[in-house]
Length: 187
Image 1: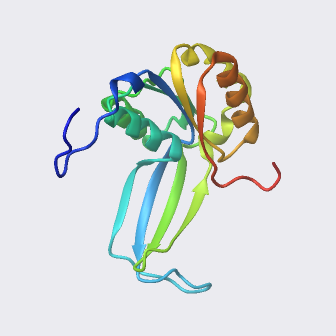
Image 2 (image 1 turned 60 degrees about the vertical axis):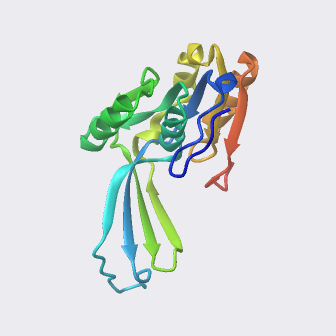
């Protein structure tokens, strides 16, 4: 057993290093730090912002890789600057991009995160290319589930994608780790 040293990360157990699947969304995030949220009809000034690849699917995929796991990501990005930046970021971290499609039909998804000085936050999400992924496209990536131990899944965006992934994972004997978030009221 390995000792944990201050500042070090705990590694994934060898028995858990089998392949994982992470599902969308894939976004570019803009985080804006504010004293207070803007009020209706008023402007709020900031002197700090951060632009970075994000989205629950992307964040989970990077987390698995950092724990020395193998991960395939299923999702869509636009054929735009943000999509290219995200593609390069994921590739440089060793995420399998064989199930990520690029599209010219819409821009890459983008989240705008406002964080107040007290830590409270609010998020606005532009779905973009994330919303173009179809259940049929997920089924086209069925082979990605072969040999996978876990499927990391979120409930953001199209619930039919979630249902399709759950059925596929169940059929392939893959355990699902579900993060419920931002469920559409119509589902």
